[in-house]
Image 1 (spheres, rainbow, N blue to C red):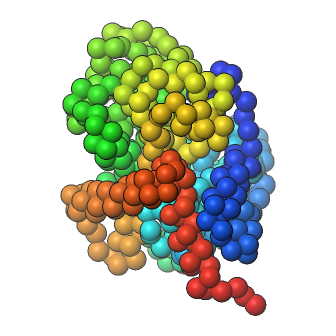
Image 2: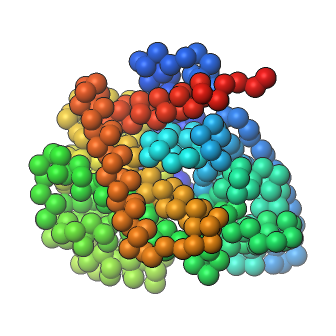
Image 3: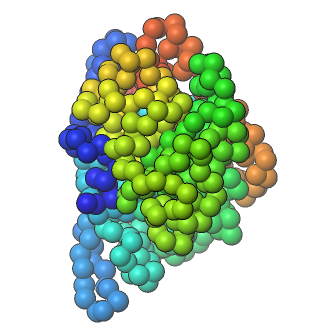
Length: 426
């Protein structure tokens, strides 16, 4: 089974991610009585670029890969969003991820729109040289639409700071001078920001702690299950453990591990680095990704991919609080079931926004050629996430809606205001 389908609940059917986003947008626009023009514009992406490009493999063969760069909106500023390398990625998924980015940047109130990029490939089976050639050709092909003032990519599933460095270099070579601001999530040596690698996981940890305080859950000893032990999941688990939480289960695309007494998360990360998976870690029993989602715990972090929790398995979720480390891990139908069961959900557009917030900090630092300390980055991130959480919570309580609807209401109001103020050309 592929990495993409494995983390989902075994009985979950894969829905259209973009239709799922449109459903949520429709519901909020109707509730807010958003102007029809704004509603219609939010339902569609502004630009969709599809590229098919050749890459020479190490054995001399030529393979043609398909890539995407989708810009959902640039109303509030340059489009912003990661690049995903994954064998199952589609245009529909990329459009959904771009729309989520538009909402996410509006929720945390940074001057960006939303975009997303992707290449349908399996980076795990490519050599370093093949990965570099693929990245550089893809970067060259999408250079038509990216740039520090128009669309700024960043890492996502299957990509990392090295890939961002290749994109930055390729774009710069074509321009004839170094352009630090064309991507974020770069290595420090090329204008990256301290604290960027941990930012998404740190944002999840901040919102989890704020949610626990709101719900009266003691963070010291709170039990946590983390689905997806990549960048977001592993960093979240480590930071939560440092805050006193007990990490009882983690998983990746190959399976999961469980110890009700708690896992040594640093050791688990070392084990995964050595073996390629958390599976077969000592002092833990094997569990499936589906079983992890249904464990009794205080906090559940679905940090893999979309549609992990859906109608067939939502009623089996026992966690008191769910913090969405991934984008779109809960379907609309599952949201209703979780709400009826009294589960407190911190939505993706808030919970995992730490990455784009610090990407914004990196972009600003690159444009100014003035770089901050890690303490300053983390302090600014804490302030943004704290303020945003309480803004969303206030709307949730005032309007008697869940946190997702509250976050969407905040985002769409800000986007509508920008649209109305700018007007429409011609």
